[in-house]
Length: 364
Ligand SMILES: NC(=O)c1ccc[n+]([C@@H]2O[C@H](COP(=O)([O-])OP(=O)(O)OC[C@H]3O[C@@H](n4cnc5c(N)ncnc54)[C@H](O)[C@@H]3O)[C@@H](O)[C@H]2O)c1
Image (cartoon, rainbow, N blue to C red; front, side):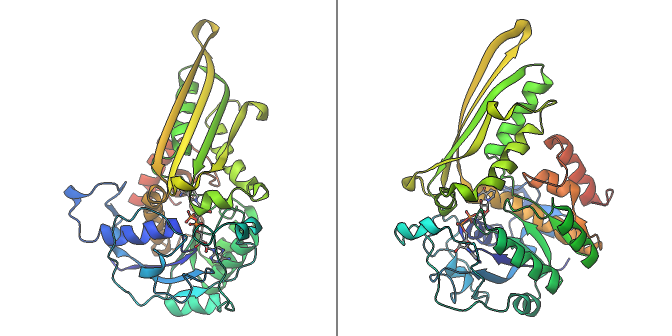
């Protein structure tokens, strides 16, 4: 099989974990591998993914080799693979637009984004010249204009998309048509981490429903200390994030909860937590005999490797779609890997569908 050439927009913590993972899993024998859902996807292994272009806007990353930029401030993701060989990719200046929340200015440079004093490169030309086949979108939550800019660049350059953020592209009818017209696949939206808050809350909600316990009220509170959590302090950037996370849970119930009875979202920024995300879930229900019960759960994970463990499969499935000349949103792959796919399925069903897609028995 050939290589899978990807471009990355947003060289933050998630990109750092992904790039580290590409090196970490290189030449690992299958029996020794820990932490992957698939060793091989249609003939593609992790080591077949190669980053050929990267865009950011932070002065500590722009102009730097990618292997150094992933460890630059304010990134704080755990380093599980410290030596990444140079591959010639230099981070190029992107288009700032609404990528940076205004409150970031009042935080120390150690913690916040700092815009580079450079003009944006020609993103379409960079994508074309690099030979990128797939763009991975890792912009901050709330980057509506910036996402649209880079997605349009994908379409103009003939590049497929894996949209890891809650700006609705794969699940939006107008964008769907544009990707179909260009003959390009898209996987999205908003990556669902390996074992994160969403998949855990969804699985428990499905269990309540399947076992006849009426869920009456629930919350999911999340805290973290990375720039993703700092960015999300600006509440007006959160509409689509809350929508994506809430719908991911509501979709597991026969009848959705009244909006008053479900609260899901990023709840606070705790700097010393760095990339450690802590999630608190409470679920209140009524079972046999109308008897009340409740469940409390605390989940602690490293946020960025948790998402990279799923993106690595979304990328390889997207490449399979390119090979098979499939265009538009990948329904099965998005349902399994994303919080806000075009169509929601219970996770066990989405997994089965994705396996059928990989085997070539399902169109999308
Ligand atoms: N960690 C997870 O499990 C998870 C799950 C779902 C979604 N996500 C989403 O993935 C995205 C990336 O997360 P992260 O933790 O890497 O964030 P991050 O804050 O570490 O990185 C964002 C990067 O984007 C850059 N940037 C900002 N504006 C830009 C622009 N206009 N052009 C180019 N680059 C720009 C920043 O400089 C920074 O390097 C976020 O939207 C996050 O919510 C993460």
